[in-house]
Length: 89
Image (spheres, rainbow, N blue to C red):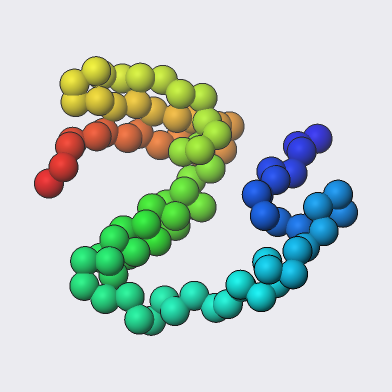
């Protein structure tokens, strides 16, 4: 059985919410992000979608293919991915 991953500041039975935690929470203003930050947000959203569709990326068996350019594959019973790091554009 997997243990739940604790997130610092997340209230639990042993760690009840503090008043400052409850007052400091608000909705994220995603629609106000513009310019270079919007492009960065889009990049991370695409990466998150890829990870969601391919569980092997995060938890599969790792096998390095080449050192330069760095490439590897990850595989689970149901999923396979191959990653090639080509550097900055």
